[in-house]
Length: 519
Picture (cartoon, rainbow, N blue to C red):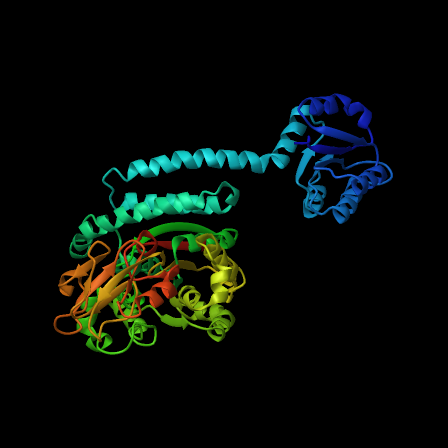
């Protein structure tokens, strides 16, 4: 491996010989230049790893040299060295994309540190991450041997997600498969935890985590009661890792506080999103809106058509009936553009502006049907990145930027997440059985209980009965249900797709984010 090559440009370069000797002893090859013209010529002739550039030189000043070098080699890192501490000069140099800025007099250790940070920073960061990851891997494995409560599982999922995003930054370490296998192990234990505790959660409020039914009461009510204007955003099917991609774009605009809630079961829109807006479990909604569960498919045009009314009724129960509310559902581009155009007037006219965004859910479903999307997002890392790219260029991001200049609190959450399904399991049922891949309801349902939870008494799970003899099955881990008919065809078609409705950390442990403008 060749020594890193440094070009040091200074009109008093002779006085810097002790520094150059020191760098040579540390394994760097230093080429001196006493003026900008020579420096530009050398950059054209040779390949350097870094440039140390004096700002104040006769003939051609450092900023001019900087601009010329960037034209020749845009990616070449440049450290500006100057006697001046003027803020405008620093800003101009930074604007021209310098890698670092040092003020004279500099000592050899300062120069060495700047070079190491730039030339070896990625390598050192990778080595440190690899070491830290191995330690975290062991901690996660040990934690699975201990009894965990809901807060422990939230913290564990948070840590795994952070590791996933860090691993995305170091693909050369080939840690994705190891981490993926560990997450699979975690979801096995998480499924056992939910199966053991979920019935207690929905029947006893003491000691349980906050659920879908608690979102409005715990995060929206205090703000409205305190006289705040609130924008309540529900992004359908948003996983925690996808939220972190969005957060990366929003952190410069808002002070962000992240909490979590658990989705009710099944982790599907007709159940969990209705529960958020109503503050009620599905069986309680069935009693008030019996027609909700009698006809139609599990989609936004049938069983979620009462969301506005459910939210209004919950506000009445929370003694907030006097608050003026607007409800919007954003399904397509025209809806998004209309919202972007009118969001400020909506906020001004209403105490609560509630908005549902369906894009992420559409993305998850579309990936199963689209060869192009599968190629664009073949992995979990690519799927996260695709979400981040969409958000960065979306009307939703523009809505947030507009709101960042207003005196308004934003609460963002989701009804459920999604999981990448990798294991099929056979299911039997009659012709009226529902079609969802991660949960089903109907009569005469039969599936491997190792892969799913069987619910023979819906009322005990606070689920709608939908008629006599209705039962439910809810998939655990990363299983998806396939009928024996055309088994291999549908096994192949849905393998490696993102689905929801079942029991996994990704589907159940959900962010609730409060955003407050920095203005």
